[in-house]
Image 1 (cartoon, one colour):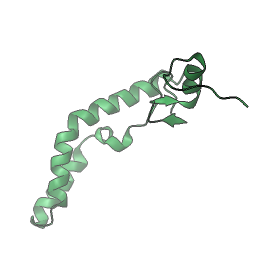
Image 2 (cartoon, rainbow, N blue to C red; image 1 turned 180 degrees about the vertical axis):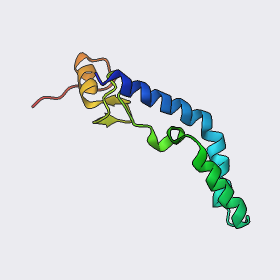
Image 3 (tube, rainbow, N blue to C red; image 1 turned 60 degrees about the vertical axis):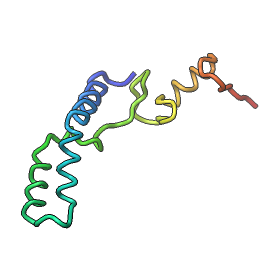
Length: 101
C-alpha cells in the first residue's frame, strides 16, 4: 500500500482539476487566441497563473485503484502490475490467463 497521505493528496488534485476545468479552459482559449489584443491575452495569462497549482490536470499522478502504487501503472486496467498479476492469478479478470513456461 502507498502512503495514505499521497493517495489523498492525489484525490484532492483530481477534485480541484475537475472544479477548475471550465475556468482554466476558458482562460487558455483567450490566452492562445491570436486575433485578440495583446493586453487581453496577457491578463488571461495572469489570471491563469493565479489559479491554484493543484488545479492543473498535469499534476495528477496515475495510481493503482487497489493499492495506490504510483509506478508500473496499466492505464487500461487502472491497476499496478502487482495488483494485475494477483487478480489474473485468481482468475478475477475475464479473458486473462496466467501463462507459465
